[in-house]
Length: 418
Image (spheres, rainbow, N blue to C red):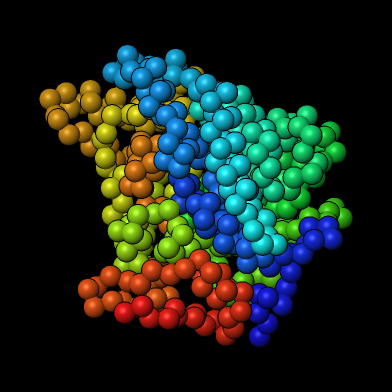
């Protein structure tokens, strides 16, 4: 059987190891994780989810503190329409995060940033335009458009001098979604440089309906897209994502026509991943029954996570004055509605329970929303259980090279540290 290293992902005349690490926010796909992928000749993602908070933690800036202070008077007001992002400060945070990452880059690979359209930020068009253009300003190698249809996203950066230089791609879960995207952007005469097809076994938000995600599989969708590319004579690298747990899994998609694979779950338990160590241990210890797909995300997308995640059922007050990344163009969020409903129904309760939605900003910021891929329950098979019951952490290089060189569905265990 072939190895992943027998294939190469090609962008024009450039070749890369066909392994892309997915963009997990908030700062779960850290700069350190992305830098390792690039050093090893592949592609790493960082995420710009809640980038002002990420900047505060990394560079000792005060974006969140200042925003909280500015809108402190509105904390008890459930009308959040006045809570706006300062676009200049948003751009500054984006340039800081991405610029520092690009400055540290070594090796032959690339670093992309994952930009979610569903981060509407009480100004969907303006805030997305700012994030995209600031990323290009900061020298990012590529931008992956995710969590949304992105019909107008190319146009938001069409005037930027790097619009045709940087690699631009989009995540889709169907041929139809890509067809509409291409049609909406046809007048720009700018095709995406790559397309990521994400199947129903992926982690976090899924690009399917609340229930029908069970009716699809990645290979079928990928083959439908490849047939569409052939019919339309489109030479666009297609990256398969979602449920690719071993190098042999990856080879099966590469042999079927994928130009590369995007992987993430196995990197959640690496030393470079941004999750706290105690949360990584929860991932290691999870069983298949511990993994659920629910509808608690205010985005409207179904989301896969550990059922023990503290975000489920939490009734914390909406943190929009500090964050507010999911506020729509009218200053509303589905969690605010659910929270208000429960407060009205239980006016004397100190601890409110909200089961149908969650305050995604606050919980993701505090690493209390444990999103995960379908095969997270297999992570325990990739390492050693120590005498104290904890699992040995892995390195990103170890996992990357296991994908790159493994055969026969084997997983290389790390060298024991105990």
